[in-house]
Length: 312
Ligand SMILES: [Zn+2]
Image 1 (cartoon, helix red, strand yellow):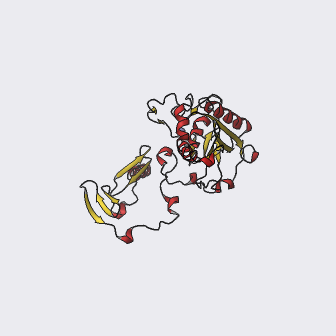
Image 2 (image 1 turned 90 degrees about the vertical axis):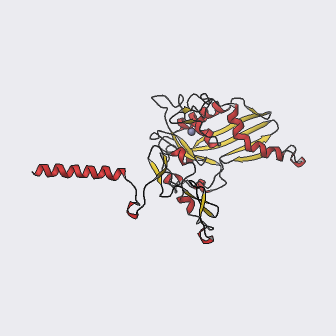
Image 3 (image 1 turned 60 degrees about the vertical axis):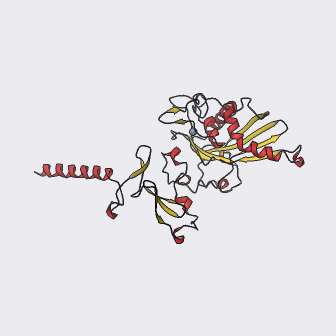
């Protein structure tokens, strides 16, 4: 009999746990029904609302199913003075790309180490016949060794300096990968330089625990310290692809579908074997060239160097 009761209790516990998992809606007790309107990563992060058909447009509430205005938003109801803390509590606009990090995480949940005050990430200089794109990357973390830093620098420089030309200018990449504080495997509690909005350095944690490399805000991120599937870092280096993100390029692949059509051999579609192509370099310099074309029309700028900051 005792055994039966224990068994029964165990079964009830297991069932209620499963039930709670399946109906994870904290607002049930307030009478709100769960309607999933958005889900990233197959249900890992559900967003649900009880009103999916009414949206706010300007100063009215609009029903997108009946195409009718169903209410007015009062002047008081409009949030004119948004609390500055709001940005820290809203969903990261690029969260779909980083679904393994909570979309509500700000600065990777590590605001002490990272501040991301919209730091500048790379610099473009145009002088004479040459365009130089320069960028400094500082590595820290348990995988940040001299050997890793020099391999990452070498891989980036080799892939990106492939003789591209944009608008007749020779394009040269000058990327330095250094150890943070000049030390191997440092573990800074605070990266004070990242608090400086005009700082254009990039800070990357390199770790043997990182399975998947990424860059956030264009200037912070995590990169793996080894090649995948038993390969060396020289054979399978995340740095050239991730550098593309530092200078503002988007991924050209999805987890489910692989490389986007036409991007199979491109660095942003295939991080291991992909090559840097003309379209990558043109894309990086798109805004800089627009600014240059205006700047160069001014007679006073003849013979001077044009400078531009890349800040994706
Ligand atoms: Zn990527």
